[in-house]
Image (cartoon, helix red, strand yellow):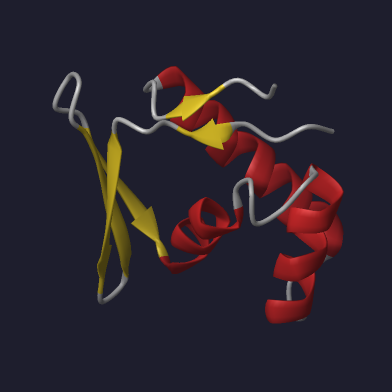
Length: 90
């Protein structure tokens, strides 16, 4: 239930339709849509748990079923981990 944290070597740059992440360590660019950018903003210390993060998203996007939100967040966090953009949960 613990969340990974944003790597300090990643720059978050908001854009009109989401955000771009840049790893200053290996120069990886990663695009996020609007919801993905919001997930990034909700990573610790903003949210303490996956449940808390998903509850915020469910409140902000009430048209999306909570189970879909959870599955999408897990998938995004795995992509971010694979690309070295987040650090494992402490």
